[in-house]
Image (cartoon, helix red, strand yellow):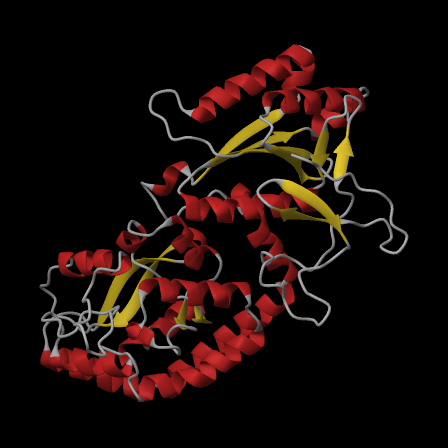
Length: 422
């Protein structure tokens, strides 16, 4: 693996950018941001804040080199996206060296630490600054799945042996190690839970969009409050209709998974009979996500549907509410609480996440769930699940206030004409 060493560039004020060419080859090119010269976003680059990379390589006295923070975080993002599609794993090791670096012999000890980490690495592993001057990181790629002693334990033992061989006991105490496996260990027990250390790009993006996010939240509060006030007579009529035609509560509440795995109580007008078997929907969703639900007959225009057609559990009033999306009106309360937004991906039920592939989780990690969204105005329940996920990810990664406004303007037409509603 060849590595590019940064050199001053008078035109670019000493700033270089690193891009991957092939599996592991690095080349130096002119400084770029995440936008091209014509102002459009480069589709091949991960969505990250608009910055150029600083000095690319840090080198110690032994000739060991590590990437600067901007480059290392970009590579971490690429590796995570690659693993999401390859059914592999990688291990991110973080070493807090701030206390060591501030000591009298900090620079020498830091150089020894870098040498020890590089000694424990394979040629294909990648080292760099996770937080410049404070936290070093190493990405151990292609971690095999094993029983018994895990690769994480083996790597931890090897790293600690090399560090103790180069540093004295007092210096070792000043280091803080943490190990983060991707996909996370918790994915089987709690698919919505994430290790924030593996997603620095998401938090960087939110910081860069802080003002726009504040405006979006203001739109959510004002819009949902006005909607509830304007629709209050309709809400009362729907409540009376539900109460008169079927036994049970007016509102249906259900646990859903929100932004970055947060759980919340999701509100809807009840459209089903109280005594029903949830396993019907659970099994249908599992087959739908796997692409096996309601296959269309040959030679017909039917499509796989996200919702069950002719569901026997749905009441007469419930059928009307679902086709017109009026059952969703109580979710404006979820928006006021801050659990949802007016626009965003639909929040999944926890058992849906159990059937997700790794890359599907991006729809709950990258954006707050919403009442309406890009896939709702692009076909609603007529789309295949993976097409829904791609539209949700497209929305999250290209989000702007204008995109929210356009979706909100398109939503009434989709609801009034019952496009894809069941």
